[in-house]
Image (cartoon, rainbow, N blue to C red; front, side, top):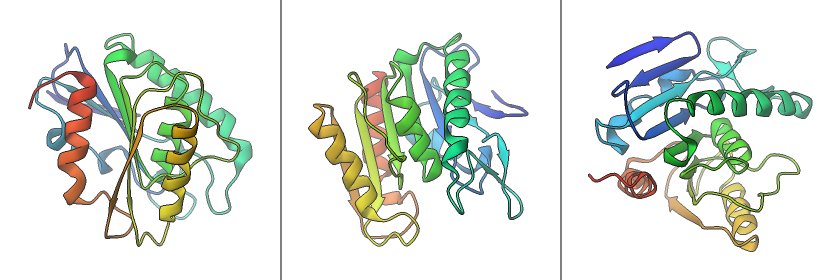
Length: 203
């Protein structure tokens, strides 16, 4: 089944027992990451790509909050809105059987909001920690991926996230690759293995 609503896109069965939720980056839209779904999970898994709530200020696409310059005053509202949307999705598939994956600004949102929810796992690709972010007492296993030559979000941002998570006693792996601001194809098998492991689904 493939369908769409105004704020989200869906792939997979309507009555799925496991789910992958995708959060796009700044200036993109819900369809940007949707093709990743079939590469990461089997056809029995529900894939939901969420659309950021704010229009992008410089043309097409959307944003989770203002980014150039960063408007941290918008973050509490963006955080609360995303948490509500994830909790609404949990009405059909529990958060404990949901992995949250985000890219760039979506990766930052996945880390921020995901670390306060009882998810199965969190994947942050080319992400960064929000100002003042601290992981909570109970955080789902986290997988980070980042290009060493990323000109948009420095590789050190994911290193800092991993350091914070490990220091707090949480599980956090960083997949580094030689490349820029992207989700490199070379790390997709490892991301898929992580998502499937956290969802307890087989290839």
